[in-house]
Amino acid sequence: MMSEGEGVAAVVVAAGTGERLRATLKGAAPRKAFFPLAGRPLIRWTLAALRRCPRIDERVVVLHAEDLADAETCERLRAWGATALVAGGARRQDSVLAGIAACSGGDERLVAVHDAARPLVSAEDLERVCAAAAKDGAAILAGRARDTVKRSDGEGNIQETLPREQLWLAQTPQVARRGALQAAIVAAGDVTDEAMALERAGVKVSLVEARSPNLKLTVAEDAELMARYLPRPPKLAMRVGQGSDFHSLVVGRPLKIGGVTVPFEKGSLGHSDGDVVLHALVDALLGAIGGGDIGTLFPDTDPSLAGADSRMFVAEALRRVGAAGYRPGQVDMTIHAEKPKLAPFKAAIRASIAGSLGLAERAVNVKAKTREGLGAIGRQEAIAAEVIVTVVADE
Ligand code: MG
Image (tube, rainbow, N blue to C red):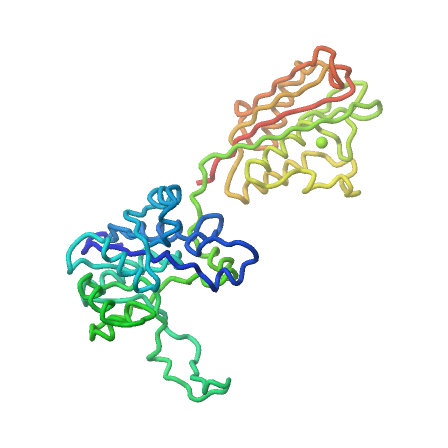
């Protein structure tokens, strides 16, 4: 992408209450610019989108006076990339004028007026519309009419079909020279966008077709569709998961620990083979990718899992870690058991776990602790395990 070219000041219009949006929400709703989209306020996404265009070197946000009076809101907006904050007016065009007044530079400075409600605008489209305005004096991003367009007679009947080739749907940014835009808006009377004021003033405005979706949030239902187009957050290089498990020890069951059969007079009670270490390991693997827990994945009410080899659960958790784009990095664990003494089995448990995760043995650590005869574990009535794993991003 081009990174040189004439600089542009963005004016982000964020003063609107969003009445259509509020009408679709139950209960109290924030002002539109602060509507949560994929867990973040709308305007945070919009400012991030503008920051991806190197040519845009200033971002003036026009706020409702109540938002501007809130110090915390102002601080957050600055952290998200706002370079100046001003109060809006009664009409959109009053807010735009207030924003233009707060921009730096003279009459020839390029100003890009952008709706806070359009957070998806791509860096490429921003660059294209700014370049067109630098060349022609004024330009807007727009979409072509894709459907056949009808004019109605006002009573729900078709009056005529309009020539689609000439029909464009105006979006933002709308970019023009500061002096010309200010003069046009002041002279225009009521207008619904800046281009309309420029048209009335006889300024030629270029149409630049948006190549990426540049949807506007108007009603709450728009948010779900828009969230699909948002840039995905960068993946963490490493994540950590934790798991623990606890089983009763009873006579007549084998004692499985980390996939190893440990000779002992009791074994752990459970629907599957009761392997306390592997169950904690599965929870740790799932935890590292935000993947829920073992009980949800493999319910102990599922008859097909009676007596199941817990290595199967580990294999499924490992598959899910891979599907999330990660692989295991390292494992550490503590096994709590009074008896049997685990020292002779630690090496085998370590090798077993390294093998089932495809790790070198040095990446697995096994620790064992007794409970000084206290509690259920100390009385040899139970066994417990705690596991921590790291997973690292593929690539
Ligand atoms: Mg268990």
